[in-house]
Length: 238
Image (cartoon, rainbow, N blue to C red; front, side):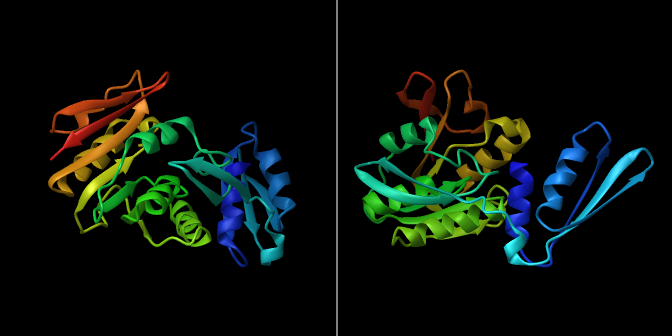
């Protein structure tokens, strides 16, 4: 339902959503939810249920946005998020550990890779004045990242990009709380690509669960910056 809510909210007036699945896959529940949001048709085909939903007006979309404040790096910021985004109700402990460890130098260009709703980028911009770019392959995430920069009176840009394929600039510092659940292929694409976008003497700082080892996805040597009860913050240098 969180994913469907995000789709309805992101699509707006005139958008359509189509679902198809076996009868016992929860389609009845999804159909009922979509019916509350706008015009919805259901029919059977080849043993599956097909649901077609059309949002008639912006007022049909459920109010699913969330707001919260978070404090880190001696700053308190205001965030807007929605279901479907990572840790959409609070600043997660991995991101907090990353923020407590990373420190851009004055004038550096910084990339928040896999930015989600922009927590890391916003805090680094607010506390250091660094030039921050935020990227994610989810356009909903980057729209909220841009919104949160604006809400907090900060400057920065958000770019929709699959890994770094749509980014043609280089950076002094790349920071990320990468989607380790996405699998080795995604992580290899993200982190190997990030290395290629580092300037001379640049660095990449990552946070991940302590039981994982992401060093195989980068060619540079990886050093431990900080260990917490559940997470590791590591650094690779160009």
